[in-house]
Length: 166
Length: 276
Image (tube, chains in turn red, green):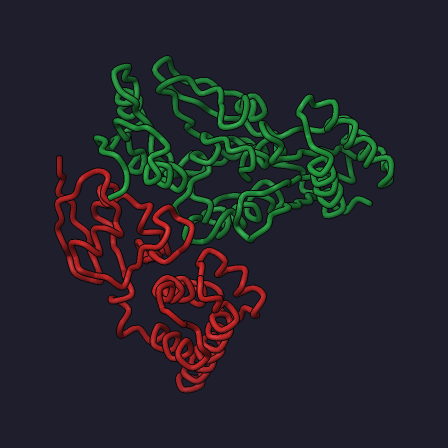
């Protein structure tokens, strides 16, 4: 039996008919055609499906859509015009933060959350904080360097805008 | 879609959840944060006919302080402890533990009560609430009761919960502010379940000590004799002997390698508490 739920996905209100066993990730990919959210392990280990749920990172593959009625979901598609996300993407490009790109959406969402919550981390701390996202192209060196570079750029930008307002 | 079909009920209150769980005709399970249950559903390892979602029961997300005891609602996520959004009476131990469970995207959803009820032997909260001498408040078809945290876990993935009974809250007494804690976890990868872990508490004022070892194939072990030695100011050699003796006495069959691992975790926790 399907139940109607309403979600705010990337700022837009969307209604959906869901089965109890349907994951948020399947709803996003199969019905909303928002395919930036990738499915790797489908049991909460690899982090490729990480999205923002009510502003906090969550695994879309182990979130049952029916439980989320009324929630706000942000996927990578919804962060297209986000200033920090643009810096992160640029850094991943410059520092070789991806090879095949499968893990990248989850890496970007997790690092976006990390830099928002905890600016100023060193490479070791970034490595620990990103340990919930797996990359199978052995790209961790590049990924950590990319996030560190983005953190530095983001801090510079924050300092510059503070200088302007002061 | 990976799980087998099941029906869904969003509980409006604790009473409503209990009514829906009290069902002899089908396998009904409560859903808290879903960070262990949903993977099990995806892998079709946990048979469920009916899922009773506790997520909208707001009273389960509250933290209150009463007479030096902090009552944590079962549905508080690990991140609430990590971020210091709930009162702390453990000199920061609970915040530390909450911040190193799995990964941030799991900590925002996984709950203290859900983790305790799953009772994975290597789970962080189980060892922590036993170390802090917490109390579990259970509510079921026959009313409310409370149990010492150490009596709540009866074995690996086994608890004292009756069918249709829920964990409502965990009550942690405020610890003396002079008490120091030490935590140590042996794990192959950040965020993984531990191979061994230990918490040591020591109050230099009263010289009271406590030592708990986790990931020991069942309920965490409280090493009371070693704690007495800690209080007396025993040195490393004597503590090692006491720990080994108590682990051997526990009746669990540890391999020599495991024994060494638990001994090391316990000693390092003691060291992190400022002893040795």
